[in-house]
Image 1 (cartoon, helix red, strand yellow):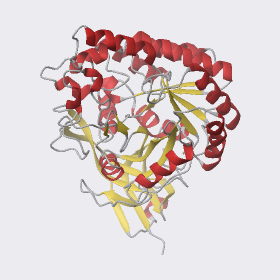
Image 2 (image 1 turned 90 degrees about the vertical axis):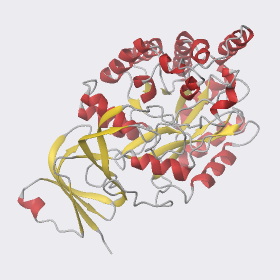
Image 3 (image 1 turned 60 degrees about the vertical axis):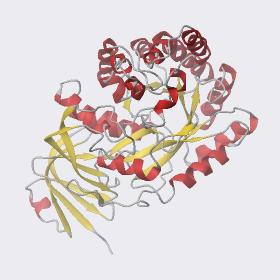
Image 4 (image 1 turned 135 degrees about the vertical axis):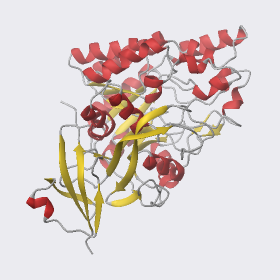
Length: 467
């Protein structure tokens, strides 16, 4: 049985166009668009009609950086694939790309299988995986080729966290050389973890234990140095590079310089770096621990450089790095020692709204909002045009967005499985009203009507920006 839905009267916004159009959905895909009020649009019949008059009709968000159920610092991220994907849907995101983790001494396959088992049957929206490579060796390198063939086409490495995820320059170079051959994309956590560990030890020895010191020891210069080094290693390997969670103006400058040289280097930032700062890390009574993430929050003056990078396309993607830990019982593990605070913030539900607020505030245009939150992450990670746009043949991942609705962000009302909001009390204009995932209603006029298990694993092609 075929099923048809028509969305009428909305302003359809994609990365390239804005048009008052009706959208016909058939069997889970976009079947057609036609200008509202035209004979063609009026002739459509469907079992379900959604009135989007006065609203935006936008592609579902693609969050290419989440960590559901991630083990870290002796605990686990508080969102499961079920709770995290439900919260994502509430926030207008219809696809996530999470990170499967290779344990040192084990195979990539074992890590990927473990994450598939966590997600399978539990997700409210579609999902894919990147692979964290913690142990570069000849077997791992061969496995990278196999994973690319299977649709896991991106691999994350860490220049930080010695003893956990850390790779040295030789291991990074080998992985980059392999990705240059197999078409994969290396994603880099660019911070000089060896130097940072020295500064952490020295700070603790001085009795500097509060959360704000987390930001002080993870210096912007050490992010910039690692970004520069990663770029040069990628250049030697002839490989593309995607730098995750860029937070500092100095790191943006490194990316801009590389891109000006014509290198296939890409950068991602996150809402926390655009809207929060070291002022939050310095909040009294250990409240600052809520804002401990890596790369860390920076002083406010960095924000204008991040916004500029998003406008000039030196930064191409805004993802969340959603990795929530509750204040009670998890963040509190670091009382008396900031280095023991689990690193990560909740945000998968907030990204689309915060970026719409950036439109309201004049930082970006409406089309750029859709570009950095939907289309570019889909292209970057081989999901476009199935995801990230509203066009015939695309999956019917569609959000009806009310640009005039006002809301106050709060842990009282969010749906993430965490006991605080990083944006508590922040007023924003714009709110998700209805969300369809492959044509099925997941959020219906501010009610959750989806289900665990609707979301399916989505294999990916290789990065669509490579020369």
